[in-house]
Image 1 (tube, helix red, strand yellow):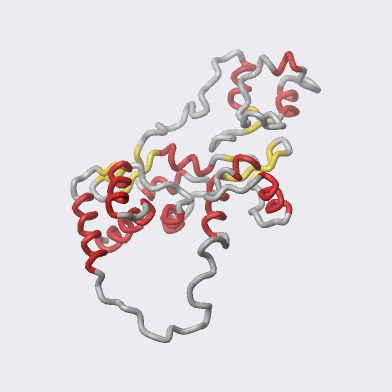
Image 2 (cartoon, rainbow, N blue to C red):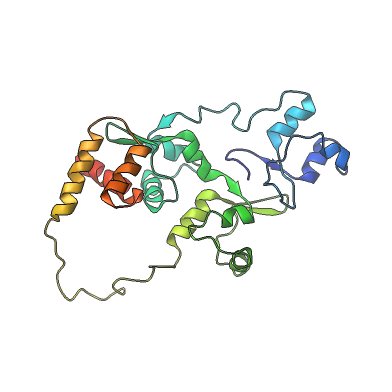
Length: 251
């Protein structure tokens, strides 16, 4: 994996930085640990770590020099952290779909994310790492077939000849691809034959009131949300969607 915001270097790139044509095993052993996954055929190093190594400096952490990864930020701040600075509406859609995790904490009814939670969406994953992001993982052979048939989004970048996808790219594709439960509902263009029941649902109204009471306490952690979801027999994604709806009503 190439962490968000980092630059990956292949063997040829590192050799060029060292004014070499190749990287013999004895030289490779002196380099910082590759950031490519263990067992990957192609080794990839972090450019910042390689440059520090060649300059004789201390090898920096992969998050070295950036803002605090544990700082809590709002949705508007979070969407600006993503590469391309996505629209707020798109960021909220990513959260509803599960492409980006739900907030780490809710403060006075306002969802907040750790910066590291958001930045992880821009991590670059190789072929195998991308497969493991699927909600229903498939075999390597099936994943390779999907890629070869063009059923998977084009890679966001190719590093040292290795295709990489952003975690957000894979999760968004996975959340919207046809699958279990997809294709249901009324066909496009076909009108309803009887009106929907728009009467208030007492059970849902009571659940919403309980959620409002929870949010009124001030800081609400992801653990609080998880426990609320378990107690109500619903998914955490549904809880975050309810919170989003409540915010729109209050606005």
